[in-house]
Image (cartoon, rainbow, N blue to C red; front, side, top):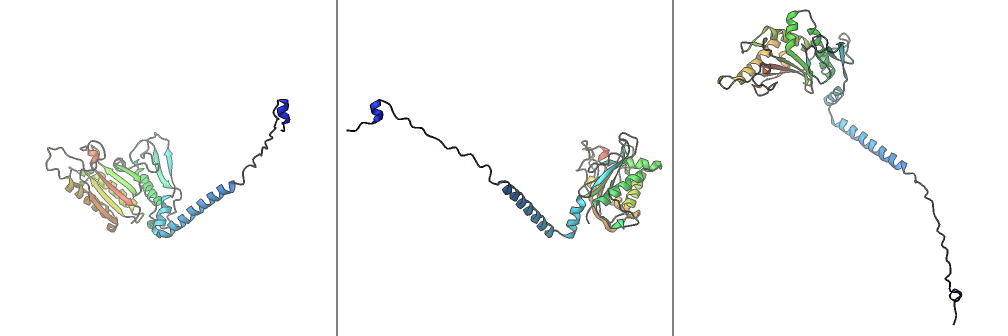
Length: 278
C-alpha cells in the first residue's frame, strides 16, 4: 500500500499558478470607419441636392437664389435722431414718419441704372431698392410730402414689398368716411406709382376698414372696403401704373384689425404688395 510523501509529512503540496497578462493592442484603425461614414453622408446629401435641383424649374431656382440675396441696413443718422425713417433692418417694418433714426435698406449690389435694365428685375434686392427709393422720396423739404409719409409703413416679406397706408385721427385717407381720396392719399399714390414703375412686379391691393358700433346698423363694411380698393386702383392707374400689373383687389371689411380696438381709425388702411413673382 503506497503512502504519499505529503501525507506522511502531514503537509499538502504547494502549487504556484502564474497568470499571463496580455496587454491590449489598442485600437485597430477605427478612425477610417468614422471618416468613411462622414464621406458617405456628404455624398448622399450632395446627390440629393443634385436631384432636387434637377426637379426644379428655372424660375424656382432663380427664386431660391434670390431668397439668399443679402441686404444691409445703412444708418444715416444715429439711433434716436430726428430723421423721417424708422429702423430699416431686414424683416422689420419701417415707419416712414418715425423718429427713431434715419435708415434706408438697400441691396449690397445695387446695379447702375445705366448699365442694366432694372425694370426687368423681380428679385428681393430689387424690391429692397424700391423700398429705399420710397424712403429717399420721403426726405424732401415739401411739407405736404413729409406730412403724408407719416401714414406709410413698408416691409419686405416672403410675398414681396408690402406698403401699408393708414388713417390718423386728424388725417384720413378717404374723406367723410367714404371713397373720395384725401390730399394725403393722392400724395402717397403718386409716390407709389413712381416707385413701382421701376420694376415689372405684379401689384395686389387689400383694403381694410374699422368696425362700427352695434347701433350703426348700416355700416356696410364690405362694400366700403371693396370700393376703397377700387379707388386705390384708379389712383395708381391715373398716375401711370400699368393696369395689367394689378393682379388682385380685395375688400376685407372689418375682419382683420391692425390693433386691439376694432373701432380705432388705425384699422382703416390700404395694403399694397409689390409681389416677388408674377
